[in-house]
Length: 106
Image (tube, rainbow, N blue to C red; front, side, top):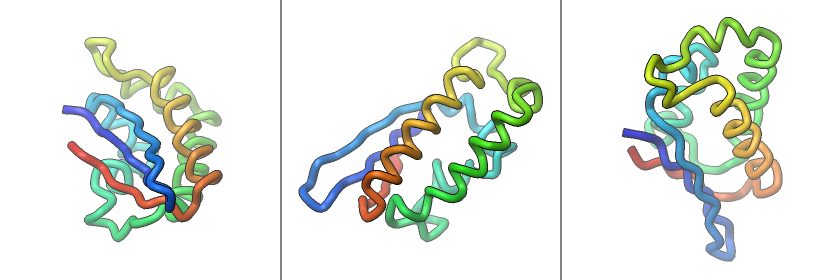
């Protein structure tokens, strides 16, 4: 099971990203598992609420790649080199559309 992040803008344009749940441990290590996989349970409603946590997680991951790469999936489906750019793309969309509605499907 993976994660689908949707950000819907006021004009109903949607940004959609998908990532494997094999990255759950890495996301947890970065402190962002709950806001990504369970935003509704953590009162995350709009993209602006993701900006600071994503920025902090990205910075931590860049500062210590080995710490996070230790959580790479053994089967190769879910790695640091996949997750970091995925997070950077999500952050860019959140910055561009801070009022976008956030939802996740699992």
